[in-house]
Length: 269
Image 1: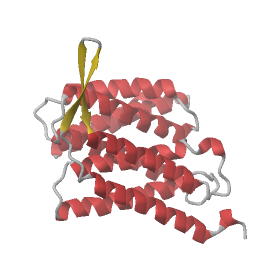
Image 2: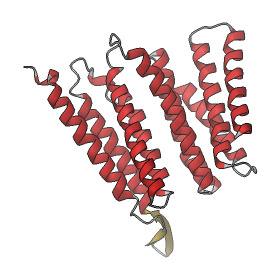
Image 3: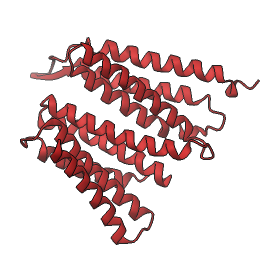
């Protein structure tokens, strides 16, 4: 039997991969988020650098997820080596956001519920990325829709957690831009099969500006997440319509309707 087609080998890789990420997420919440400074002297000048160990643990978990995803995907018989990175984006974002959410909560029944549900979402994202490697797979269309929907949902949860934790404006800009950039980049690529870096940078920048503007508005964290996610969703839909050469009227109306729905949901919350 070809080892690449051995179901037990795929299952073993998947179980090991997910288990390691969940263990890392569980351990990361024990790391204090307090800052300490590293001081150094250069000639007669003294420099102090603030260091947050929890932030570095988030980065390590994200990199671990990306590496593990590449390792797991190697069990796919039709994998092209050039596609490893693109299929690691959404799982990495998922583990990064899940780490932030878990660390912002106190350990208790609610924490364990989010931990279990987050692990289930991570598993679904991994399986969906595995499926979309093969366009002829019967689950391919559903996996595409699922990945895009989960990306927006994770982005909403991420923004709500950032708003709830009352981060500084600089921190919001520093974190929101790369996440919105990656969500946009992957969403467009899933639909058009093209890497539109220019669109992703532009949409990420505009979304970040709105995130900064709304940061101090008197709205709840969930409303904040819904409104900014609505902006990101509308901009991504508009870019996809333009890239697919749809008529301008349709390219504008569909995102506008989507944005109004997000606003309505946000107001009702």
